Length: 153
Image 1: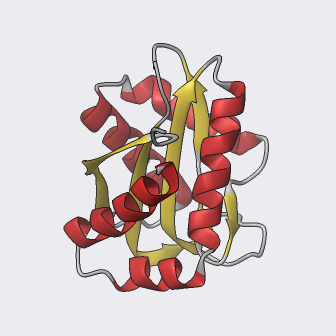
Image 2: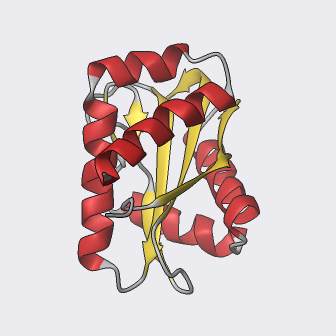
């Protein structure tokens, strides 16, 4: 079985942002740079989804996501913020872990399965602590890739 989405090492980083719009912009830039996507279209689609309701689902985590033409499989990016930022999350808490997901436009079930897997991973208390305490991007990627690979097995 293969992973539900692709997460490349360069799609994982620590960033600084002071507001939600800056986080979404950095996420779009990261997706564009790593996966060769149009940053304007990515940001547009993520912002459209965000208007339906915040993707900040609580405990300091947000999962901005959207569907995009031209993709052949779901791709992900992960940003750890150097300080928590207000994100209109369900629990009112600011976020410092942002897991972005982009899926092909027609990927209904695949998109939902990938979102569910990310949600499970981010709800795990040990994982949450490990991601918050990881020393840098390499360690963050190793933690995430380990869970993604394990779940695909």
